[in-house]
Image (cartoon, rainbow, N blue to C red):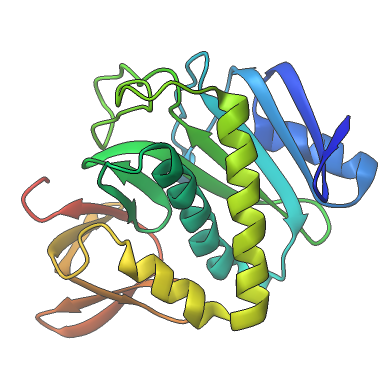
Amino acid sequence: MQKKGMWFYEDLPVVSSTNDAVVDLWQKVKTQCIVSAKEQTNGRGRLGRVWEAQAGNLFVSFAYEVLTQNIGHQVIISALAVFETIRFFAPFCDVKIKWPNDVFVEGKKISGILFEKGPENCWIMGVGVNVAQTPKVSNLLYEATSLADLNIKTSRSVVLEKLIEEFDKLQVKYKANGFSYIKGLWLDNCYLRGKKVVIKQNNTTTEGVLSDLDNNGSLILKTNEGLKTIFVGDLFKKDDK
């Protein structure tokens, strides 16, 4: 075990899931901590989906204390941290955040984030970033890409260092300026803001114009029936699905 700034940190050769492994570390240190792994055999994504884990990509989980009523704010902060990280490595690319916290480069998904409740007052933020390889799966919801596909050569450890830096900086700004500041940053870099979108939730769909975030980080759509607040779902461009 080592320290990265204010975080206890472990990098493991292989885990079933870094979200599970970081819970084990939390139980030992009882304070904020991070676990990454060279190989992840049973990663998971949002809504119970499998996260495809190729060698050389970044699989990492953060465990830290969060008031449950503020978890929506942390979801937005997590997206911004990954966004800033990707933009650092790909400064000349079109990098955007797709609600709630996927990051897209040139219209393709490069990262995903999963929040899960941990023990006591801790929450787990699992992050996957396609660094060295792009998933080759036929049933992906969104076309994928990687830093390698963008001709950007780096390593998962270097990307992680930048991610920790950006995440810590955003937490300082959040504490100093409140969620309205973070919300503004997110909206400035939002994928499809002002465009017609479709939200799929189980067997239902909602169509509207992507308008805003509420003060909890939920999505606000302008629909024919008025403004609607969306708490969870998959977002698509109107013509995609």
